[in-house]
Amino acid sequence: MSRRHRAAVAAVVAACAVVAGCSRPGPVADTSPSDPLTRTFRKADRPAAPDMSGGTLDGRTVRLSDYRGKVVLLNAWASTCGPCRVEAPELKRIQRAWKDRGVQVLGLDTDQNRGDGLAFQRDFRLGYPSLHDPAGRQALKLPRGLVNAQAIPFTVVVDPAGRIAAARSGQVTEAEVVKLIEPLLPAAREKASRS
Image (cartoon, rainbow, N blue to C red; front, top):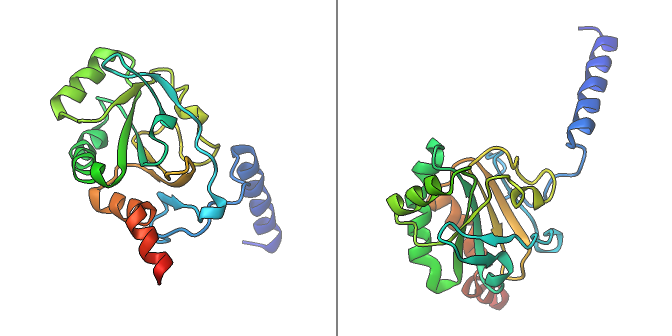
């Protein structure tokens, strides 16, 4: 390939990145550089989480800001999504094991039919609320480029101050989530400040 041809290809790739919104600088301090699906932010660089709110699958009203002071795992899912079905038991375990340490899982159900979401919630006995977001309005409130809001599942980690600390596109495991939440919890922060 000639130098001129390589320059033309590079110009096209750069133009596509700008059109696609990829020209923004990416998040910094990535804790898993070998994993392109996970992004983390240093404390000073964390964007504010949008205050998602609305009705849950079981008819209550909830706001993301209701959980200020806790680490929140916002997980987008749908009942027909295979990876969502695989990760549901992992998120359930996290909710059960970590809630007393200040962690809250909040689902974001993208099913068009509320009944499908309710069946999923009941079948997996999730134990945490899920906003019903069939039109995707809540997911679109996330900062542009953080995750592909149309590709589920994805998980966003919100720190106790209501700022986005990390995001994971695709299915998560309990071990992956623990790596993201542990540094945000009070005991970990106290230990780090004493060191």
